[in-house]
Image (cartoon, rainbow, N blue to C red; front, side):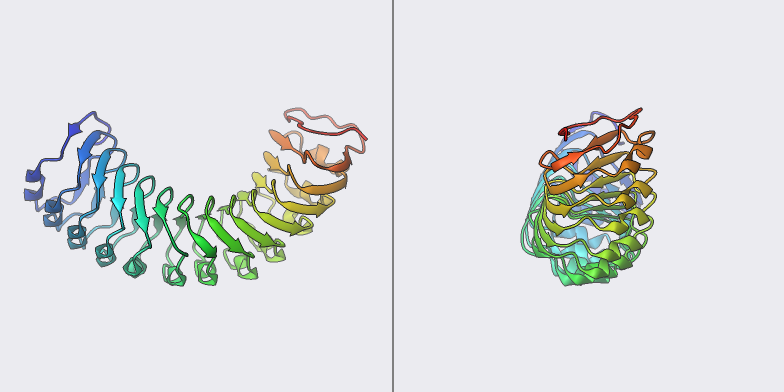
Amino acid sequence: MSFNSFSGHVPREFGNMTMLQSLFIGINKLSGNILKEIGSLTNLQSLSMSFNNFSGEVPGEIGNLTMLQLLNVRSNKLSGTIPKEIGALTNLQTLRMDLNKFSGHLPRDIWNLTMLQNLDLGYNKLTGTIPKEIGALTNLETLSMGSSNFSGHVPRDIWNLTMLQNLDLSYNKLSGNIPREIGSLTNLQILTMSWNSLSGRVVREIRNLTMLQELYLDGNNFVGSIPSNFGSESGLHILGLGINSFSGEIPASICNLRSLKILYLSYNNLEGALPDCMGNLSTSLLILHPPFECKSTYWPHPINIQRGLLLGFENP
């Protein structure tokens, strides 16, 4: 029933379909509360109500659906706290609750969902820190908690999630350093930690992330030089390091990033000459966005940018 223009409230009679295994009513114009009668659908394995106008709180009766493997309520107007009864859904593999108005702390019961492979809680109004218990979700492949108002340090336990392929903690109020344990996430393909208050140096262990395709660290308080081992991630397509306090020269090893399409280094304290070898990236580089505040930054030799866009250079 997805991808239609159904509107109005879901009839209570839906609760009578007790043999139902899958219910997909996403991408419609449905509104009102999620009915308590949904707790009668105890054979459901998949429930998707995304991209509608449902509002109010998720009823505790959702905890009756212990056969659920997929629960998707993303992009609605749901509010209140995430019900602790969700912790009873121990067969869940995918839980998407992003793009709503959930508030308060995450219930501890959510860490019982050890079968989860995909967890998306982003774009809500949650508060508090990311609990260390998140380290129990060792089957996670995607963890998205961006734009959710989390504060404090990133718990070290998160680096135990070695199956992760996509980690998004952007647009929060996270602080502290990125620990060396990040190097254990060797399956990561996308790492997004931009727009927080993270600080310190970028640890060398990041070179262990050889599967990485996109790395976003912009909009933080990182200091020191750009690690010379960034060139180890040869499959990197996007590298965002702008709006930090990086200093020194751009390492020549960055030229090893043959697949790079977007390079963002603006608003740092970099200086010196741009590496001559960066011209070799021009056939794949779509956007080269150098530092506007660079001190005496210049191209040492003319280069031929075939598909690139040069922004903000100063002549020597």
